[in-house]
Length: 175
Image (cartoon, rainbow, N blue to C red; front, side, top):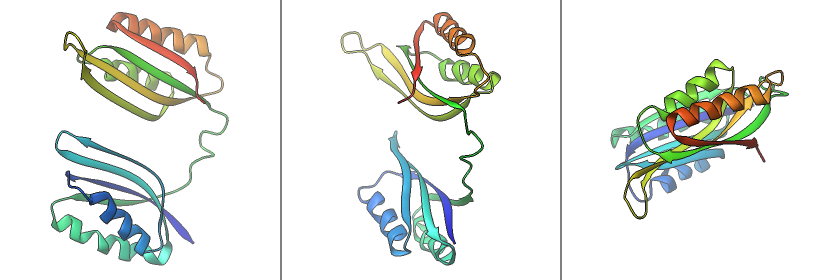
């Protein structure tokens, strides 16, 4: 029976690292179901959902010892399919943008948590504005909202938080 494994890796960025990792997975008959990868500063961070045969899991973990020896932090965690956990919940796309300052991510995520809303994915960045160089913040994500939660209640209060933080908050049904 196949296992679903969440593979996380962090360490210095190096050309060919993704090739090396996916080769290890492929060699064990595994498949990358989904992944997210980013270079953050000079470090590389990888998050993958890998499906691998039950009998190949122990060998896959051994394969990653060489990366650990090279200074990478590698973790393999078996996970279960929890698609039923959020059955019937409604997906919404959230986008937040404006001048960057401390606390934006915390304020938005805190509000979502207090409403019982689950963050499915979220990407954030800060880049200099073209003319002034002022740091501009951008957050894009998808959340799952309990079906009984009133859209206008949680989204209007989220927009009020955006007004207080001086950022624009846009919410729409996820595609």
